[in-house]
Length: 397
Image 1 (cartoon, rainbow, N blue to C red):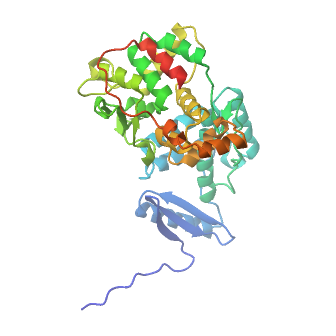
Image 2: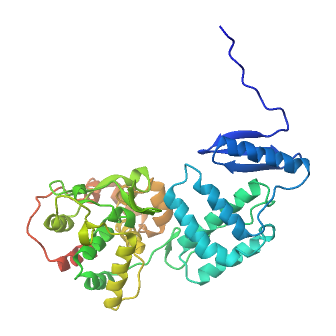
């Protein structure tokens, strides 16, 4: 029997190639305490990069680097597209950030000249332009990932992107800016959308359950159980290179079944169809995020109300649950957060402040947990109800 061939080890000083997160990395020790790395989609490409890095080290020159920040961002996003573990919607988000924000502000600067002052100035300018803190944070994270990759591959000495948090605004809960609405303001919103039955239902579901926009648009009639009065969230709408697609929700905990309040169960049961998406247009075409946003903005403008981002409705709903004293674990499950810690991180400031005596009374109250649960399943009434009556239920949440 032939002896098994032992794996050969590359001699010291010739670098290495290893698998990492769905791709491969070529790494070479420059001999001065630095390591040059290049990420590639295949082992063959990584081997070619290793040889090129060795040649650069032998001539005591840095690996060739792009001349500008814009050129490097183009190269970086091209490599991200080839990585199996990066989702398509993430790539689309990166491309939008690079095209609309990073290139116009930083693209012309030489890559080696980009400093912390440039990055901080760009962040401050975006905040002054009125961008939401979460949007600015996503832009900073995208630039940070690109510049860390540039530093790892020897194009720059270090990443100039600061790790400090983006400053928030008034009304910020954790790191999410929440616009609090009074019962009268919610009533005004329903006055605006009352004539559009599907938009009315979308607002009700979001303000009551705190659904994400992608989860709302991914709902099918088969997800609604009229007997149990439950709604199953199992998929989300995303836009890829080939248009709208259905995929899994944001996290594993986002796949959930939530109990519906009676008024929403009545409303869904009245409009229920045997199959198809709940929110669709002509020819049973599922709404996209653009369709929903367009109808929402038009309804507010026609009603004379100031603009309000759709995603603010989710944050308002979750904040109201916390403010009313609902258990954080239960809120986390309804909202589809990965853990209760996520809910506390973003919405801890919305929790009501109670005295020590009241805390003791709550802990000794045997009926507290029962009052925090959603109501038991009642019999569905097939009779229709006036959509305007739903405003009263929302204002009591």
